[in-house]
Structure formats: C-alpha cells, structure tokens
Amino acid sequence: AQEPIIFSGIQPTGVPHLGNYLGALREWVRLQNEATAGTKLLFSIVDLHALTVPQDAASLRKWRREAFGTLLAVGLDPSRSTIFYQSESKLQLPEDTTLDDADARAQLRLGLFSYPVLQAADILVHRATHVPVGEDQRQHLEFSRYTANSFNHLYGPIFPTPEALISPAKRVMSLKEPTSKMSKSHADEKSRIILTDSPAVIHKKIKVALTDSEPSITYDPAHRPGVSNLLEILSHFEGQSCEAIASEFDGATLRALKEHVARQIAHHLEEIRERYRSIMDEKTGYLDSVAQQGAAAAQANASVTMRQVRDAIGL
Ligand code: ADP
Ligand code: NA
Image (tube, rainbow, N blue to C red; front, side, top):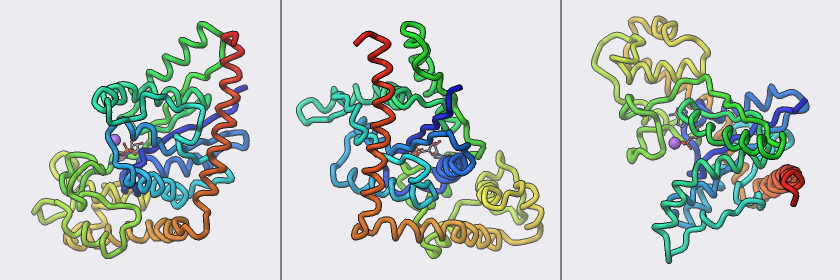
C-alpha cells in the first residue's frame, strides 16, 4: 500500500499571523507529531508562487526567510519533516514565473493564471496523498486531482489522487473588521497578531480590537462578531467551547475578557517567539543548513517521481 505523503505550503510573506497559525501551522505540527512511522511530510515556502505578483527582491528575500524560521519555531522538526523553499527544489523552475522588466505585465497575467498549475506541479511531483488546506482552498485541489487522474488514465498509476485535509479550526477574524478574516493583506497592522508580537504589542492590539457596546459577554457570531472572535481565539487555546467560555465570563466586563485573551495569546506564543529569535540568529547558520537539507530531500523525492514519469511515457 502507498505510504502517506503529506504536502502543504505557505506564502513567503514574512512572519505568519495568528490566523495562519491556528488555521494551518498548528495543524501541520499536529499531523507531524501524530504521523505513523512511514508517513512522509513535506512543507514548502512557496516562493515561486510569490512571483505571480510583483515583488521587491530585498523584501522577498527577508520574508521567505522569516516564513521559514516561523515553521521551525512553531514546532516543525527537520528530523521528521522536510522543510524547503519551493525555488530550491530545482526540478521545477518554470520560466513563466520569472518576472523580467521587459514583459512584466504579460508575465504577471500568466503568473496568476498558472497558480493552480504551479500548485498541482508541487503536489504531483512530490506524489502527495494528503494536502492540509483551509476550507477556502478545497477548490484549488480539484485541478491537482484532475491532473493526477488524467495522467494515470493515459500512462498507468503513477500519481496518487491527492486528498484535502480540511483544517477543523474556524477562521480567525480581523481584530478591526471582525466580519472578514484576519489577513496580512489588510493595511491596518492592528487587525492581526503576528506570531512574534511582544506581550505589550499583543495587549495593545487586543485592547483596541473592535467589539460592541453591549454590557454582557455572549457568543453570537452573527450579531456580535468582535466579541465572538475573541471567544473563538480563547477556545482554540483552551479547548473549551465558546459558549462555555462566555458563561465563565458571565457578569465580567469586556475589559476583563480582553485582558484574559491578551494574556492567553501572549502565553501561548511565548515559546514560539523565543525559538524564533534563536533560529533567526544568522551566526549559527542553523536555518540555512536546515534549508539546504530540506532542498536536497525535496529534490530527491521529486527525482523519484520524475524517473517514474519518464519511464511511464517512454522517455
Ligand atoms: P493570508 O490569508 O493571510 O494571505 P495565506 O493565504 O498565506 O494567508 O494562508 C496560509 C494558510 O493559513 C492557509 O492554509 C489558510 O487557509 C490559512 N489562513 C489564512 N488566514 C487565516 C485565518 N484568518 N484563519 C484561519 N486560517 C487562515
Ligand atoms: Na490568502
């Protein structure tokens, strides 16, 4: 039987936020820690996908490194998981993702168009059987499944049909606009908690989080999205239902709730923040050596696929 191969990726847009952590990264770490011995795990910083929109080279270099450091800081273990930059898994450097000044606009359109193609290429080249994604990405995987099945139909069973592992976590909402999801694309930095925010910054952001002026604390996402989002964040950390937490805070002030939320976030991110700081210390060379090791392992895994593919199609 096919041993499971779990593959997922994250954009190289700097240190991830609390939504990325609760919706994706924490789930990856859980999958890693609960995986059976034969399971292969691959996690990619998708820095070629990033080229589907114009990037400034210095920022991209910094952001991809920060994203890599965060994957290690949250608990992905390089002795168990292959962690790598997509661009260093050298089997796939499609020219259409290289933006040059001459024809940037046409390239950009092609880049956006090719997003599902790039994603399918990643998933298939690693023979992924399971792809952890957020609910919003279920559709993206359909193209990969279709491509795998089409190839297999023509040439024999080379590619597993990748299955989505939908994260059980509800979306974390913006602290400033709690009807839309927390995202790095929101201009207001107070709308999100970054995983490396200090306790003081976390307290400040939670203090000014948008809530309503009702005196009590109740869980009601439709009518009270701000308060409900805070309860959901607590629920992620404390493992209790939002309703149970709300009834614990029955009679308490919103200010007391916010203080508790800020303390809990700061407490749960403390270890990540400290590990991040030591991982990012360039003098140790740790991050770069993990990245090198990851690139080699990802390439080796992809080479196996390409050998099978060439065989199957007669090259
Ligand atoms: P962003 O949405 O900030 O651009 P990405 O698209 O890079 O972040 O998402 C990386 C992963 O984090 C995906 O699996 C996505 O489903 C998850 N994710 C992003 N934002 C949230 C959120 N607010 N709540 C829960 N999960 C999220
Ligand atoms: Na997104």
